[in-house]
Amino acid sequence: MAEAISESISFFRSQLENRRFGDATLRILESVLVSKDVLSLLETRSALRYLLRSEAISVVREISQKTADEKLCAVEFFVRAFALVGDVESCLALKYEALVLRETKYLKGHGLQVLHEEWLTFAKDSLDNGFYAIAVKELPVHQRADAVSSLVYEANARMRDPVYGCVGAISFLQNKVSQLQMQLAMAQAEILCIQMQQEPSISHQQLDTDDKSFLLHHNIASFPQFMNFASSSNVVQESLKIESLWT
View 1 (tube, rainbow, N blue to C red):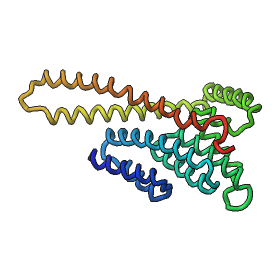
View 2 (cartoon, one colour; view 1 turned 135 degrees about the horizontal axis):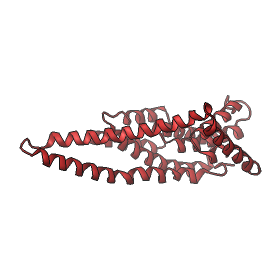
View 3 (tube, rainbow, N blue to C red; view 1 turned 135 degrees about the vertical axis):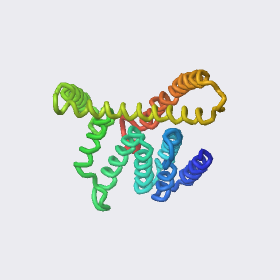
């Protein structure tokens, strides 16, 4: 199973290296994300996020002198790819670039003009996910301070309001519960594998000790992986923030 996943990721990487930014490559990505167990899925998503962030930075640099059509094709591909692997921050950062590119290069024709509703949706998605810097990115520099103040006021109002404010709190708690459930499922799956591998002659006491040792080791070993998610999520964000890449 692990070998098959590794081969699929390698194939997807080769598509990226050959700069094939189409639906066929996205279908390959979707097939890679089909996993039979939670642990494999988490490992695969982590590897794909790292790969996509690295390739996105390289591609953005390469296409700086390309046509608007080529830029838009590449950026929108990565928007969809990051969405598939659950990298919300990178997805929003590149979504902003796609909107700016469409707004500046396709003012007329092509059917690619940016609608006002698209900017509102983008700002709402950024705000709902806690990315205030991305939400105000579309504003002129001299208006950003006031916008941030307004966002802070709205965030505080959400927490105080007994009806509207609870929506954000519920969403936050649901995300936390989902994370804990995934970690619990990982631990239970690993414990089951160990128990199945134990010799029948091993004592019950020794089995309990091994289980406790495994849980302690597994939890400690998992922290760097989850911490790496938080630190590496800034890679694309740092390279894209403040101003558009091509303005």
